Structure formats: C-alpha cells, structure tokens
Image (cartoon, rainbow over all chains, first blue to last red; front, side, top):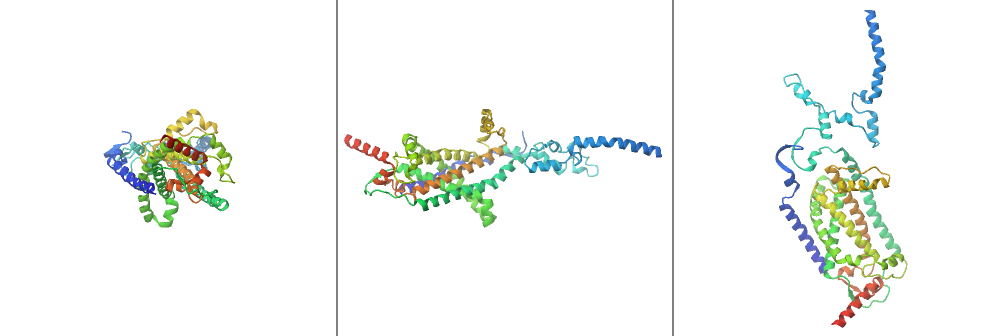
Length: 43
Length: 394
C-alpha cells in the first residue's frame, strides 16, 4: 500500500501547490476583469 | 344643435369599423401595447413569442419633464422600462466589472438551464447512480463472488509496478473526492439545504468547492500518467472479440484468454481517458470562466456540417452569450461525470468484492499465478516468455 500512501501525499501536495500558484499568478477573475472606476459597457 | 349631434354620431359610427380593424391588425391594441393572453400562453407552452413590442418599450429619457416641472424628477423612464432596457441590452449602464459577462445583465435564455439543472439533471442523475448500485447488488446476489477456480499455487506474478499503482491511486483518490464534492455542489440546493439549513450548507459548500476546484489538477496529472503507462496495452485487438463473445467469463463458466487487459478493462480504460478528459476540459472551462469557451465554436462547426439536420433538429444556437457557454459547460461536466461515476462503480465492484484476487493487483501489485492464468492467460505466457528470455540472456 506504499503506492497508495504516496499517491495521497502527492494528492495533497498537488492540490495545495496548484492553488498557491493560481492565487499568486494574478489570474483570478477579480484581477483580470475589475477596474478601479466605473466604465461604460462596450467601451 | 340636434343636427350637430346627428353628424357627430354618424362620424363615430363610421369610425367604429376602422377601430375594430386596427384591433385585429394589432392584437396588442386592446392591452395598450402590453403583452396579451396569447403571448403569455405561448410563453408558458415554450413557443416562440414575438417580443419586439417589449424590446422597444424602454422609455425615452429625453422626454422627461424638466426638473422645474411638477413630478419632473421622475424622468422619462418607468422602472419596467428600465428593466426592459437591461434585459434587451439597450440600457446605458456603467460598471466596474470588465468581464465578458458584464455585458449581459439579465439572461432570459438561462431559464431553461436552471429548470433542467434543478429538475431532470438531478432526477436522472440520482436514478443513474442509484440504479447502477442496485444492479451491482443484484448481480452480486445472483452471481456471488467470482472465485479463483483452480488450486492456488502460492506463487505470485508482478502485475503492476509501483509507478502504475501510484498513478492509479492518484486517479482513484482524486476521482472519489471530486465525485463526492461534485455531488454536494449538484444536490446541495435541493437536498442538503432543506436537510441541514443554509448556514451549515454554506460552510460545507465553501470547503468542498475549494477542494473540488484544486484537487482537479491531481486528477488531470493522474490521467496523463495512466494514459502514458497503459495506452499500449489497451489498443483493441482480436482477442477482445473472443473475450466479448464469451461475455468475459463473468456469466457462465470458463475464462476467455486475455492479455494484460481484457476487453472489459479496455472499455473502462477508454471510458476513463475519453470521459475523464472531457470532464477535465469542461472543468477547466468552468475554472476560468469565459476564458475557454468550448460550445459556441463546436455548435457552429456542427451546424456547418449539417449535423442537427440529420436528426431533424433546427441549427444549434450560435453565437452563445458568455453565460450560455458556462451553462452548457456545467451541464456537460455534470452529465459526463455522472456517467463516468456509474462506470467506475462497476469497476470498483469487480476490483474488490466482485472478484477474488483482483484487489491484489492494485494493493501489493503481486497477483496469485492461478488468478492470472484464469483471467489473463495470454499475459502470463508473455511474462513467462520474457522471463525465460531474460534468464537466458543473463
């Protein structure tokens, strides 16, 4: 069952790792779509 | 004076047919331009309704009374007119959001999605998973556990090495967690909120959504690992036909010959790769809303090929609004996931309680030689030939 346990560790590592990468990559919907001021739709 | 009344009466009488004709020509004349009973009935029976009379009824800000006039501050648009402007995308709006979906504030077309997601998707989804479990339980009661028929040798053969088992368990554990958290999202509003309340579900939903979104990458990594390791063993060949013709040996007695993977296992493999790949693609589309739109382009391509016409259908909707793209992605993601979950139920059954000796393949990687001879006879020959060759070379 060593492979199973290693897979669980990898599962946690990949889950937290990718989350941290995405959080710090500035690719969130808020970061990419929000602007500081009101804008006209279609501008 | 009497003569004047007579003339007035004559003029009115002559106008009546003209007014009646106008009412016939414009059915909304009787409702003052608003929707009619016919419009409501057509909408309720999900027929097309001509909504041009509403689209244009959005008021006129320029016609507002000056602020100095009585009631002048009310402006030239009523609330219904303003909402119509928002619904039909003609209102002059400003927002801080720059996302693609910001241009669609009211999406009337999304109601069919909401109805389908709250109704048939849950009903048929629960029926599919519940029905599969029931069938497996029935099969177990009728057929029982498939035992190793011959005498056990006490010798074992390595069936899967550590890396193969690692890939399998990474895929299995991520899929199970994705399945449970996905079902919580899908059935939360209809089942869990009525049972546990909004506040308790909110905490669960926030946690499971985080897990579902982030664990998905482990599933994708594992999908790539098992594809690389096992694709060569899962290409269809002639032995699969024999195996299928004999029902895989599950029904009745006797074991049809099979290589490392039999036809049933190959079907599981390709289901996991194709359906899992499709789930991953639609999941990425949902993870990054409006960035990877999959459906509008697909629908346009299918329309170009005339595919809807083959089934007597109208061309598929195109172009799609950003919200529609996400709605189709959500439905596809959920439906394909439910189908794959039902298939995996069968896989888990046969790999555990359904067959003696099967779990060892993924547990320790070592299988009883007799089990291997009964279920994968051609593979055993290949392994032993390779060992003999290797022994001679050594």
